[in-house]
Length: 99
Image 1 (spheres, rainbow, N blue to C red):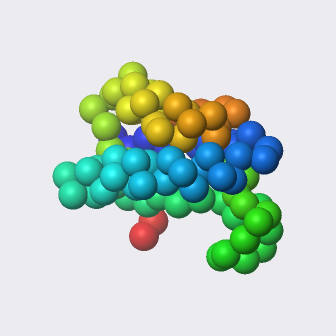
Image 2: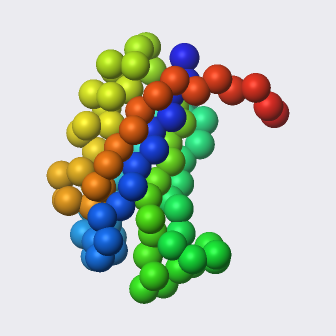
């Protein structure tokens, strides 16, 4: 089943986010290579793909896991958490309907 991992950034953590980004992307690449990643990306703080110094307000990952507890365990190990970027992370089941 798919699970949505919805994370909210702490204000003023753009540099921590950028520093932890390679490790964060490496974990997402592992999910992608295993055929388990549906979609992933950040939420720009302003209405543009490159928000510059405005940074991001959080991230969304939708991926396949065996259970909610497995999805939560994966989310708990995110490098952005370890770097102090995320203020809050919500993990919940996601049902893909379209496309």
